[in-house]
Length: 101
Figure 1 (cartoon, rainbow, N blue to C red):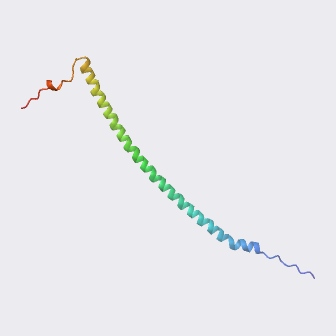
Figure 2 (figure 1 turned 60 degrees about the horizontal axis):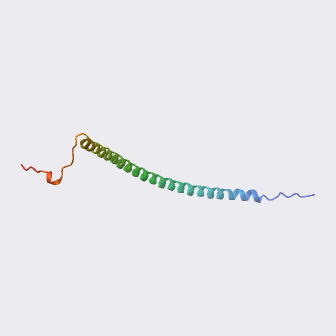
Figure 3 (figure 1 turned 180 degrees about the vertical axis):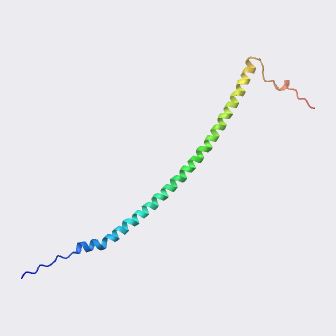
């Protein structure tokens, strides 16, 4: 009589015991990468907020400069009309008279 031996199943046992460890390792790597991504995202959001604050400050400054430019432009226009059409001029120092009450 011939006895047939069953082949030993070492490979399935190895997979059975190693698979949870491999999955745990993959899960830990995934958790570290998620944490790193959250850190980078928060850092980028902070930089974005700083740049938006800087942009708002520059917008305010730009608006003030435009207002100043329009104000100076209107004074310049008035001065040019006064000199050209009305033949007015800025008085010299000896022509200025100060009146005291």
